[in-house]
Image (cartoon, rainbow, N blue to C red; front, side, top):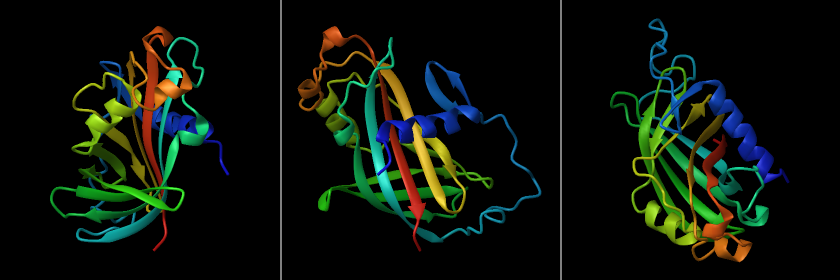
Length: 197
């Protein structure tokens, strides 16, 4: 079993390599032009209307902003996930529907919408309805309009988002000792999936 913290740090390192920051949030450098000679999906073998089956996990963790110390329990920093990525054909539109499981027990379905470029860069909006649950569990002040950024190379799908916030611990992280006295946290959320079809 992989260490969830190392997995999250690896995902963020990949994102930082192809990203720039503005207003403290990770964003894709959208000024970098896509190769004009590459038609949508040519490099990745993807076509509009196509669906791809994926499995892996969703991740979420909190670190003390000042020290980098993990403040959330590693055993609770991920959920098993199975998903369907669908290329909508509408200006490189994409949807990702994920079923999340705690062990083998189904928890919920999440629906992400966004875009994918011909080279595989992905941008997904935070799913509607998820903010209230994330706030409830962590007690964090989550900024509006968060997006997940990352890539799909035809086999591996990785996206993540991050923010810094004071958190009161909410209903779950308080059990890990998180409170406003902990100070600001660096909070990460990610999706790490592999193609299985």
